[in-house]
Image (cartoon, rainbow, N blue to C red; front, side, top):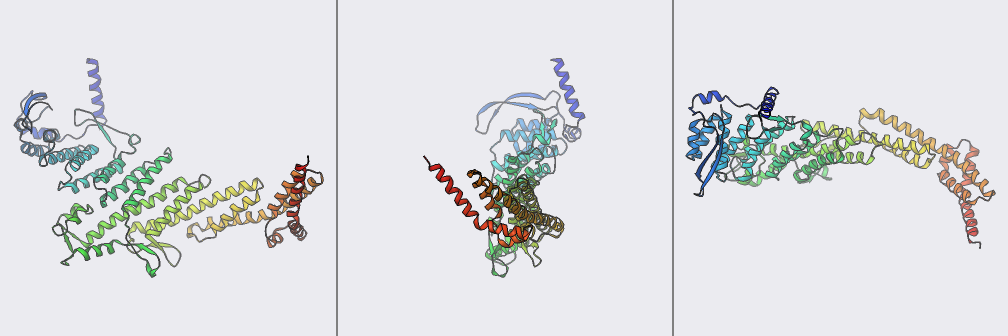
Length: 545
């Protein structure tokens, strides 16, 4: 036992040297002003009367150095006094403050007066000790148990800030049990979905509020940032699904007629705010007060600062609506980016490139419009710096994906050309020529032109090779027919028909000589008769007894 104790002491010392001890506050300064009796720590057993008037035995572990005055308030079961003292002590002595707050939370768990205050104090001390996840969970207890608590919105904002710190790279910590200071930092690879889980709890607290839109987007962003070379398709799909949920659930759905009366566009935040104020601002003072419009404040779309004066102005509503829609827009944009990261190789999976292009096109159709130069620009109402940058990048990425697809089609065409399957090769070269003939962003023009010219040259070369091969196949078919090898003759005639089956103008253009062009035209006239004749011969042979 002594040896085990020595190892525990060494482990504790090692943790301290590694910096794994949370801040404890200036305990000495607090305790110097409050007299405490020595020996009043450890496990204490007493009999108490609970809230229902029943006597029960209570076991309480008292940390070393808890002030006697706080213990007297606890022994007399005065939650108001315990909380008051704990709040003051928490400024300099985290241990004493936490002890008092947890005692109230445990002994008055259903009190709407003392319970929330106790749990908020627990969360605040955990924040000061840099235990972000424990602070988040303490705030969540208040939100879940007392949904009508007046400071609910403020607590959710605090949770959002905690989750944002983890999103920015702060590590999760595992606190050793039965104490409040020593912890082990957890490597990021062991907690890949925890940050997203915090945001999902925020979504669950107010699933249809603008704050939930932000949390849902950041949930996807947290999953996206965890993607790496070892990530699976399922990991990437989780991030895509989170972004898709942000777009589907929180995207603005009100539509208006587009410029010129053709098509539809998304209603802007200004237009929506104007509509709301026209209906609700009856005294036309440019404000919606909590007293006159309580539902507006229940919307959970405004910050605590915006609601501090008990009134919402039109600019504040426009800002809230813009915040919500930008989260949705960023989600749509990120879906395209994740698919694009999977489609870096045109040979890998062309369908992934197409998914990326569709996602970017949906983003552009919603938030941008083509100008006279055939370039996309943000629509009115969506012209912030982020939209300007993202619209331009999305258009660039689409054309970059087209280049990836073109490279894939070029490689596929080359593959079929090596197998002398000229028809299949021409199909893929033709797709490259068609796609690369379309207008693209200027910076990609040299790459587009190089692919277009290469595919066009290969496409033309396929005609010459088809003619050469077609003539050779026809001669082979004639020889096989003369030798009575009718099955081989039929196969070669059919391949001749496929190789030489294109318009006269192209035959004359790509044949090596005028004589060869005339020969191909004559073969095309009679190859169907050749095939029919051989099929008849084979049928007679099969029907012979």
